[in-house]
Image 1 (cartoon, rainbow over the protein chains, first blue to last red):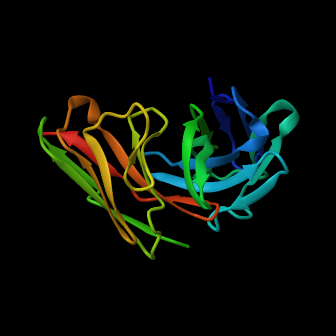
Image 2 (tube, rainbow over the protein chains, first blue to last red; image 1 turned 180 degrees about the horizontal axis):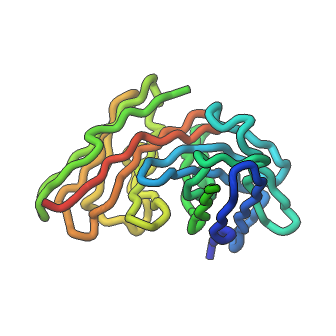
Length: 125
Length: 107
């Protein structure tokens, strides 16, 4: 069974650093991209970026480039999202998701097929 | 970046009603469009991929159509368990950006 299990809720102060995790199991972790999605309180879903754990190729949404760092440790099937200096506006639920899909005759279907349970990050002084 | 405009942002309908949500892309995305359902306090769930393909296990009352820039998501007969927020999502190379969401409530 494919599972993505995220680390627990965090309460931090502005200026602090943070690294949250997403551990994959039940599939070949190095063969699928893992994406991160932000959901601010009462708001919609925002795609932050994506990483290929096989070679750590990483792409960021322009909105999040330079604001966060996405990484992965394939030896323990875990992807990470980290901040070096949190702001109150980083308060949100963060989801990781596996980018699934398939290709036929060079045309590929792409979607997030499995999701983590979410990690709530609260930044408050 | 490709922008996705979803409408309406919310709607209220009766059980059994036909519900339609639209999503418009800022440029041609062929059929690279997915639909997700998010219930309160839960992670999103894939319902439709490639604009019109129903994900395995998803009830047939859900459907999607469209290509290019204009897409439609339909619930043919709204059920109480369909109360959720629905999001479209396009994929362009490695970016998977979402529409703003449509909150569906029971009247």
